[in-house]
Amino acid sequence: MAVSSTLTFLNPFEGPPVPLKLAGVLTFDPEVHFKLSGTPLPAIFAREGLLSWYRRGVRLMTSTAPNRERRAQMWMDELAARSPEYSDYLSDLQLASGGESHALARLGQMTVFEAINRARGLQRADLKPHQGYLEDVGAADLALVRRLETGDMAGALAHMAAHPILHHLLWPGAEDAIRKASHVNELIPLFGAMALDVHLGWMAAWDVDRAREQCRSSSCLEMLLPSAHRPGRNPTSLFFDELKQRLGANGATEIFNRIPAESGLDDISTLDRWSNGTRLPDVETLKVILGEYGLNQPDELLYAQLGCTRHIHMLGHCAQRLQARARESARPQLFWPWPAYPFEFPDFESWASNRYPFWLNFHRSRNGDGTADRSILPGCEG
Image 1 (cartoon, one colour):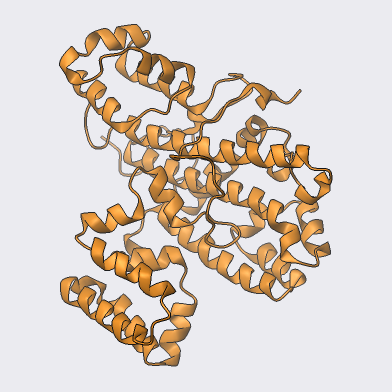
Image 2 (spheres, rainbow, N blue to C red):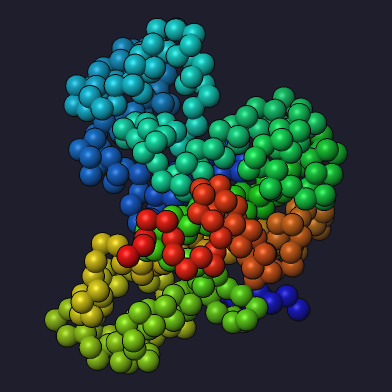
């Protein structure tokens, strides 16, 4: 029996499960990332005073009105007047709207990740490693989609095999499936599996960056991944272990008794549900707890770990839905590699325990961080 048969992943999004939006075939759309962070994309623009501008832009994208071009120019002019730091991005938009070929080419190569970063005034040099990783994979994903749309499976496979990141998503069975496919629709389950692996790689990039900030030589997030060593424990339950360790507490009762009644945490059942993994932790409650222990600092690692649990739940929840569809189908071969995981691992635990360390090492090497067992990281001496 597969280890994860008793493992429960929670839906980290509000409402009933729905298919997650992809930016291409290998990357989850930025909206997924923003929702998991607890700050949907409109809220990001609202914080910067650009919510109405953002909403008009969304409407413009689907508008067929005859004055669309004039409205789009007004939309760009408004942002340029309010936020001059976006001028480089807007200049390409304005040139492209006038038919300038080089600007059109630049925008045609721009992924949704780049567009959002540039629109927020972030250049490549300003990005953290996990943000840069998404731009890199997003650009490669865009190029892959263009090959797939023309039915060029050989070109798609060659593109992946030659790419410094995408080639790490391939295994012999996947290469054979891409080579034999006659239409991209035949590869949707496979690319879905690869998208989960890409996201695991994104988590590892985030992990490596946080470890540097915390001056740690080991992973900050790996302990939140379900494993065969702790059967049945989901990310929320494992997060509660980290919370107890950080607070020096033995369990939910000890933590609850430390919190005053006026804090709003008036029921120990919230902590009990965190402990048994049946309720997603929330930032507001964590903030109250950390405040009582004198640990409520912006860079407190538990905040990042709480956020990470939502991403792991998303991966597991998506994977288990794909597994169920493969097992229930009269033609399970159409869902290959499911019900197995990427690289044909039999369950979440074996997949994560093999692939997450791989991605950690990839990003440590890529970012010049050295090895995992160094006792002192660069810049953390003394």
